[in-house]
Image 1: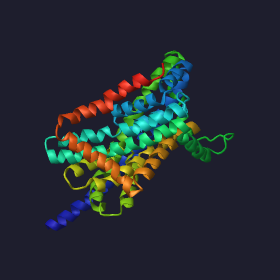
Image 2: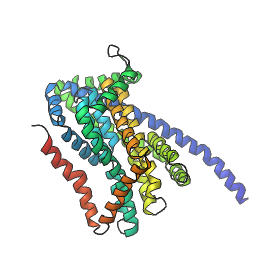
Image 3: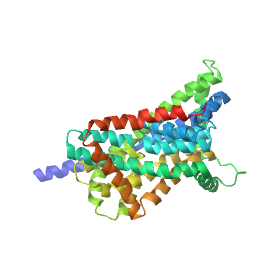
Image 4: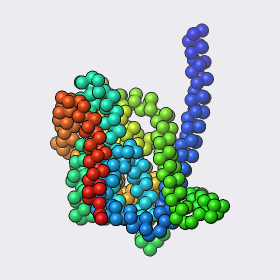
Length: 386
């Protein structure tokens, strides 16, 4: 009877699980709409503010070094490169920032997103062996992104190769410059954006500048909240299965593991979630740095899906930035993952840094605060255009 009762319970649980997943999927679609609405609202709001605000933003990001540090600092604060890149796509689509000035912000966002892994690694602070492994795992992601920036940032500043390549890809998608492409999403989003503008300007009689400021605040809230709950929603469906799957596949070919990191991150739209799941496993010694590295690299490419999604609510310029984000990570993969000998460099840097930090563990907190917050803020203020 006990076995029969257990089977009956499982049969009753399946419909409930299916119904719960349907509800979560529906919620995800609603959040996706709010996310795209926030992107569309943000881009239009900067246009309403006029040239003054746009010029101030352009001046701030005109120096590529300032743009790089803005990307690092902003992403370190919100702990999501998806938020930073999505807002950047919206600003470019709205004409507030040029493509040239936005690309360094995207590069900086790739560095800033690794702060989440470092925060997770501090959970192993009380156990030396675990903390050393976990801290190395967190810095492996950071080392990969920093090395990619060190190589590609000067090349982009000198030649504009990322801008040219991403513009070419955007041109293929949109057609020739003389043609216009209207995303189907704009037909769904634009009416609501216009309704929000009318709501603020009509009954209250606010000026265009006031409406623009209120709309910017509202759009940032929409983007941040929607992305946060989208990640939670998808993770609640996949997280338990994800960890089991990861444990099973680490004996597979590294390119298979890489694809798993890419696909999983594309689904949950957060490289921070994918890589953060790895840190406790690395800390516990269940997974080595060499085994976790392909997941990390795949996650870097998978996270670009969010910017590509955000570009649906924008124009060709926004799509260009989304492609620049994708190409940046693809180039990093080709340089520091595909050749076996370069694959060892980020891992070696991470191990060396962890070996140094473990001798004085309190330096880990100082490292986190200085590298991701204090230093980018100081350098951003020092390098921005006057």
